[in-house]
Every structure is written in C-alpha cells, then in structure tokens.
Amino acid sequence: MDVQRVRDDFPILNRSFHGHPLVYLDSAATSQKPTVVVEAEERYYRESNANVHRGVYALSVEATDAYEAARARVARFLGSNDPSEVVFVRGTTEALNVAATSLGQFLLERGDRVVTTVMEHHSNIVPWHLLREQKGIDLRFLDIDETGRLRLDALDDLLGPRTKVVTLTHASNVLGTVNPVREIADRAHAAGAIVVLDAAQSAPHRKIDVERLGVDLLAFSGHKVLGPMGIGVLWGRKELLTRMPPAAGGGEMIETVRQDRVSYRDPPARFEAGTPNVAGAIGLSVALDYLEAIGWEEIAAHERSLYLHATEQAHRRFAERLNVFGPSDHGERQGLQSFALRGVHPHDVASLLDADGIAVRAGHHCCQPLMERLGVPALTRSSPYVYNTKGEIDQLYDGLEKVTALFN
Ligand SMILES: Cc1ncc(COP(=O)(O)O)c(C=O)c1O
Image (cartoon, rainbow, N blue to C red; front, side):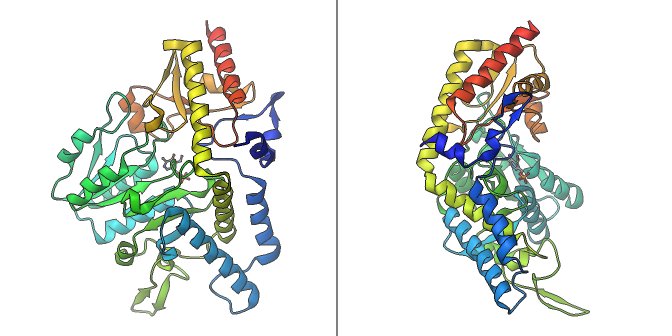
C-alpha cells in the first residue's frame, strides 16, 4: 500500500497546528474523509438533490435510485444479499437505540435479562440502562480478564433461561481487543438469546461478514469508515427485522394512517421515519468503494506494521513507564493504543502533544464502566488509520519523550 498516495486523497492532512504539521491519530473517534467522498456529497446536492421515495418526477427518481444503490452497496460490504436488511440511521448510537427500543417493545419483559460487557461504549450500555429503568430488565455485564479479553469462562453463568439479548462490541475502542463474536453468538443462540453487535470500531478495519459472525443485528457509523458524519447503519436479519416494531414514527415508514389506527411498512422503510440523509448514504457507499479499492488485506497489513512499530517504540523508549492497555498479540487486537504515562495525567499528555500538532484523545472514551474496571480515571489514546505513517508514530513517541522530560 502506497501511504503517500493515500495521503494525497486527504487534503486536511496538509494542515498545520501550532506551527507543526498535523499528525492525526484520532481516527477511532472519527476518520478523515478522502476527496472522493466530499465530492460525492457535494455532487449530490449540486446535481441530484430531491426528496426520495416521494416523487414521480425524474430528479426524485434519480435521488431515490442513488439512495437505494447506496443501500445495496452497504449490504455487499456486510455480506448480506438482501439490501432490505440495511436500515440507514444517523450512526452506531442511533442504531443501537433503535435496536434496544424496538426489542424492548416486542421481546423484553420485566425481569428478562440483557447481557452486555464491561468493555462497551456508552452507546451500547445506556440504551439498555433505559430499558432497565423503564421496564425493569435485568442488565448484566460480562467481565474482562487482566489482559483485556472477555471472560468467556464467565459467560455461561450469565446465560440463563430469561436471557433474551446478548449485546457486545466487535472491537473495543479502548483496549483494541477484537472479540470472538462467532463463539459468543453461538453460545448466546444456544441459550435462546438474540445477538446484537456494535461494529463501530471493526467496520473501519475489516470486511464485515454477518453470516460468518452469526449475529442478528449489527450497528456501525459512516464517519469512522472514511464516510460522512450523520449516516450509519443498523443491519438486521430480515426475519427478525420483520418482527420488530418501529422505534420512531413519521413520514415514509407507514402503510396507512387513520384516526383510529396505523400500520407500518416492511423493513427497512419501517425504521426510517422522515427524510433520510441521502447525501450521507451516497458518501458512505463511496467511502466503502475507496476502502475496498485499497483492499482489506492491504489495510490490515499496513495497520499491523504501524502497531508493531508503535509497540517497539513503546518498549524501547519507555519500558514500564508507559502502560499500554489491552492484549499484546496483534492477532487479537486492532492497531489503536490506549496508554497511561507514569506520573502524567492523560489530559496533560494530550494537551502537550497538541502543542506539537499531534492529535490524540484523552478521557474516559465513553467507557466509564471499563475505566472503573481498569482502575484508571482516564487514558490517552492514539488511533492510526490508512493514512498514517511510521514517521508519524515516531513523532508521537518523540512527543511522549518530551512530555516525560517536562514532568521530570
Ligand atoms: C465501540 C463504539 N461504539 C459506539 C460508538 C458511537 O458511535 P457514534 O458516535 O458514531 O454513534 C463509538 C464511537 O466512538 C464506538 O467506539
């Protein structure tokens, strides 16, 4: 993979901050966008904008066709042969809220159990907490071990006769851990539960295959896969989506509305109330084309080399002064690194790196239960992507050495 050629597609990477070229290492929060994605959105508004599904005139038909083509493109990315399994939403957060709200209405009763994990993003905890508060569901958390992997040995204890949903992240946005989804899904299904997968952190880095993963519902965000903000996906098995009630009401999701009754359309329309983000869906499809043109294996190899380089820097320059969380074996993790630098608050680390133009994130990363489990108030996270170079990883570690020197 020619990183320099990839970088040429991301003009934002030419910016400077505080007199230093930008080193963008916050792609787990949001990725940058290649020019083709920005142009596809702009072209839609310049040439094809009309409301979808509502017009008989040519422009509206064109917009509708482009929107539905984007849906088919996403289905292909997910390994689904049925585009109607793809529901466009604003992002992972909305997708998981739709899933929880809808399952809460037709599946979950007081005392029913939902199993999530301690490494989840708040987006995959709070929607279930809402059901705990509103309906009295029994919300349980699968723990992690000392290496940052899920405690699969504790799973069966949580899978009782009333376990209706098992919901987990494919990859942790803090630990980098990639979870053995298929094994968990098989065990959850054997216990009669539905499996929901948060693929926000995996979709940017690997081709998703819903059949191989064996899950029932899956969520991801466009803006983390080089696509626009405000577009995301809830994928669901057709048979399940068909049984699920809508989570929001409005235009386009109805079949008929009378004063005394209402009926709903089939999925995906049932879950897409109101005018959708057509430009965003088109931008997302172009982003997936862009990633696939690079190639998932090329992307994985590039990210592995960045990760191994970062790990080598961490060991050689810092040894135990830098505590990097999560599994150490790259085969079981993604390339991001969340760390604690001994004696320096994570926010100070991030602020001092910013002074050198290096953009990393510090905080609880929307994972307060995980921070509590790890016994840390916050961590600093570096999350590289397709456009980052080993030179930038060196700059990060140079910056961390400066931070250490300052605090000593
Ligand atoms: C694992 C995980 N789940 C969910 C989300 C929420 O995604 P969004 O803010 O795009 O809805 C994130 C975002 O950081 C994430 O990392």
